[in-house]
Image (cartoon, rainbow, N blue to C red; front, side, top):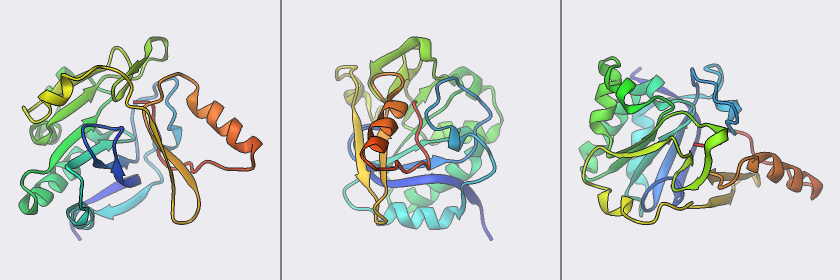
Amino acid sequence: MGTRLSVARTLDRCTVLGPGSRAVIWVQGCPLRCAGCVAAETLPFEGGTSRPVAELADWLCALDGIEGVTFSGGEPFSQARALAELLDAVRERRPDFGAMAYSGFRHEALLRGGPDRRALLDRLDLLVDGPYLAARHGSLRWRGSDNQRLIPLTDRYRQALAEPDTTAGIELSVDADGSLSWAGVPPAPGFRERLEEQLAARGFVLHTEARRER
């Protein structure tokens, strides 16, 4: 049957979760419980959609106008083997495809992890590491709190990392079924609650698959 990945949500084009225009895959399941996480629905390992890695590779390879993918969640390194296989499958057809991932674990801890985690690290160009700490929330580029680091693992994004370290903002999108969703790192704590309250007051319900403050 091949390797499968438990997925909370996908987005085919995003400009606020990494350099340039990129796809995003939010995985399902996280062993951490960061206070203030805005995507509690992605924390349980139950749920999500089980998808073949080959299917996700076909999807990524068919997307025009993107330069790479960002893995968020959930905790991507809880499914490191499947994500490493996914990148290998994509790069067989698109060798210059970029890859970025979020992790609630520190880079040093991931390096001490098992071979699957090291394999995924070896295939990434950029890592955002560390848990979200609400007390240290900041309006920062691609991350929610100032303990989190942008760690270049290759030279691919070094020029992008030299740009100002300020928030990339939030993107709202309307899905084919008419549901509203958003992506990005909120520049202020409590974003999700305020947004949902304001939408509810206007008769809208926010899509609740996978969003996180990371």
